[in-house]
Amino acid sequence: MKAIRIHGRGGADHLVYEDAPKPEPGPGEVLVRVHAAGVIATELTWDETYRTGAGIQRTYPIPGHDFSGVVEEAGADVTNLAKGAEVYALIDFDRDGAAAEYAIVRQEELALKPRSLDHVQAAAVPLTALTAWQALFEHAGLQKGQTILIHGAAGGVGVFAVQFARWAGARVIATGSAANHDLLRELGASEVIDYTTTRFEEVVKDVDVVLDSIGGETIHRSLQIIKPGGTLVSITSPRPSFDEAKAFHVRPIWFIVRPNHDQLTRIASVIDEGHIRPIIDTVLPLSQARQAYEYGAKGHTRGKIVLSVVE
Image 1 (cartoon, rainbow, N blue to C red):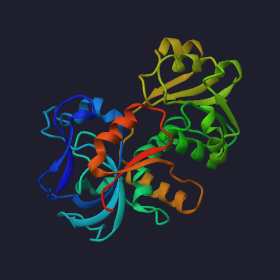
Image 2 (image 1 turned 90 degrees about the vertical axis):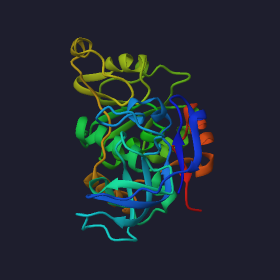
Image 3 (image 1 turned 120 degrees about the horizontal axis):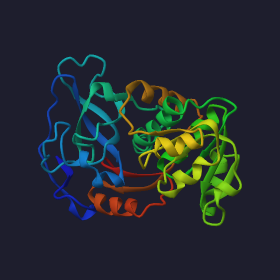
């Protein structure tokens, strides 16, 4: 099969489009014919990309851990997914991903893709939507009537977080560049702050939740605008120290998204009901993965970058 494999630790210049062995599913695994794969530009910097969960160095790992495709073959003990089923998933980060014509996926990671989306659209969902879902509902416990401030709201995670928060009945304040204000309001933000001209802490007070996808000083500046007892969730940097957060009576959380069949199934239902939609920045063919990752590494994308595997 054709695949993108990483030939050295570093940036996108180590990505090679080449022939690779077609994998075979083991017990509890599914072989999927990949139709489209999402780009996670930062994964080229992660330790998990280059070694297994047991700490063993991986040889020529394949990136791209969220995807949409069709079941080709099911391994032993897989009874709920027939050949030809259209599925999407987030693959755990310490295994080969889906930037290839075929990928091996554990059955508990897979869910039926949203019926209303094609494969390219569906591939833009798993990582970013699961991150937003877990941040808002698992970790922050966002409730109807609460106010949430979402930093980097036009990014891959942000566009889902805005929509999920609106769907849950929360009031959404978003930060983003002026070019994305109309989109963010369309997605459900009631207030949008241009971070290039306005310091958010000067115009926002007493929010229940902050979701940060920026990191750095944004985390520390956010503490002062959260209500006592509120929550700061970061997906980019370790949380501020307990002492610092305690001084503001804020609960700090940092987490790494995990695959989740049940959540993907629920997300598919919300999408098919018309409440949520993916936002795609760019679609490139699998053979141009290097360009896709280089583009993603520049940041400030609007939604998700997707690799098309099946034309």
